Each structure stands twice: as C-alpha cells, then as structure tokens.
Length: 92
Length: 249
Image (cartoon, each protein chain N blue to C red):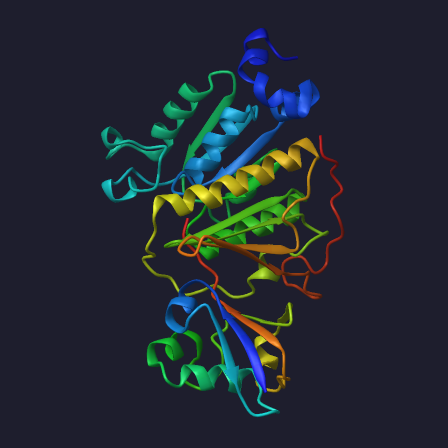
C-alpha cells in the first residue's frame, strides 16, 4: 500500500516535507513512521521516546483529523491515507 | 468621536470599514503579552491601525541579540527596558492612542489582573507555560486569545474564542521541550502580521477568523498550510465552559 506522509517544520528538515511510503497492509500509524525514522537517528529521537512511543507534544493527523498520540500504536493505516506529523513551535 | 486628525490618519483604511469600524478600533483595548519578536509587529500594526488602548507587558531589557527580529527596539535601546523602548516607539508611531506598559513577568498570580478589562489577548510569548496561563485567563474572562509561535523560518497561528472553538490547550495539550530556538525577523513579521490581522477582523466583526484551524507557515518553501483542530471534550482548560457571554463591541 502507498501512504502520503507530510512532515512539518523541523520534522520536514529531518525527513523531507512530503514523502510517499510503501508499506505492508495493516501497518499502524506508529509503525509506519518508525519505518521511516529507523534510517535516521536524529529524526527518530526528535519524534519518539525511548519506549518507541510518540513524544507527547508531537501532533499527529490522519486524513485531516487529529489522532490522539495514545491511539497511534493501534491505528491501522490503509492504502491512500494521508498522514501528517507536526511539532509545535514555541518561539516568539 | 474621531478627530479631524484621526480622519486624516485613517483615511485610507476607513475606505474599507468606515467611521463605524474605526470607532470600534478606537474603543478597543488589546492586551499584548510580550514586546519581543511577535510583540513588535503586532503592537506596531495595531497602533497604526488605531486600536485605542494597547497594554504591553514584558520583563526583559533589550539585548543586542534581540535586534535581528524585535523591530520595536533599536541599537541605541540596548540595555533599556523593553517596555520603555516600546512605549516611546508606539507613542511616536501614533500619539492619538493610549499605550500602557507593564514591566513584569506574567505568572499565574498576576495574569488575571494584568489583563484587566482588555477585550482580547495577543500571545506574543516565547514559551508554552505562559501561553497556558494566558489561555486560562482568556477562558476565565471569555475573551479571545490570538496565538502565534515561531521557530526559524517556521511559524504557526490560531485564533481562540473561548467556549466556541478549540482552545490553546485543545490544540497543544503538551508543551514541546524548552530550547534556545533559532529565529529570523521575517518569520516574526509574517506571524505577527497574521495575529494583528485577526485582532482587527475580530474588532471589526468582519471576515472569517482563524478559528478551529492551525495556520502553519513554512518560509523556506513559501508555503502556507493549515490543520483542522477542534475542541477536545473534557479539555482541562475549556471542557466545562460554554460560549462567549460578552458581545463584541
């Protein structure tokens, strides 16, 4: 299956702003992002904690809707889904 | 009632929203939290637009490292209180409005009193803990909060109407880690201008506000995007409140 993933702000610098990821059906949201981050330690550490869960401030979106970080590990991704991963920016 | 000088000053924008609109701006009181990167363009644009009363709060002194983005302050202001520098500049920009400045740190104890009778709050802070305090005050007073945040060439903005739209904590339940963030003045200019635009639209009761949407700016790609956001049932900040009681002036 093919999934469009958008990374915003500094996550875009680490992974690219928009990528198409080929993955096996049944992959979870967390699993999909891990597949990408596995090749990129700096990126992985910016998104995941040491237990492999999304850092609590990272914002996740699936098909335009907010996804609770606690649900990312059990949310299955389907062919054609669009997902987004976004870090809030704090400066002023 | 607008004076002859005010008619002249605001002539080009009164073509857009008329004398009634200009009076609405004149009657308004906007609280701006921070006189730094975002606070600079927000306060300058609200001042030139003729917002009648602006209260600006900041605790810092002007440092040379601020000058790449904090356009209220000049090289000769280095070492001065930002509030003193801001007061001087804004009074010079528009002597027909009232500028209040308060040199203090916004905290849980003083925030409600500092905001006072302001009609809205502009978040021009550089940290999440203070933003959560401003969000709580906006909810308690049932006044809008205009959020902005920047990092490098990236920025975000959202307008929060307590009880009606997603609040700051609905959008950002958890704060990102503290950091010395990279920043460039133009990003503060883009996001601060959006915040000021939102304030004007709110006061003028026109246009479509940036509510339930998080605006995202990527200056490196010159790309604007938005994420739909919504109120979180049971939000610890706004979960128990209903819509705005106070009507817009």
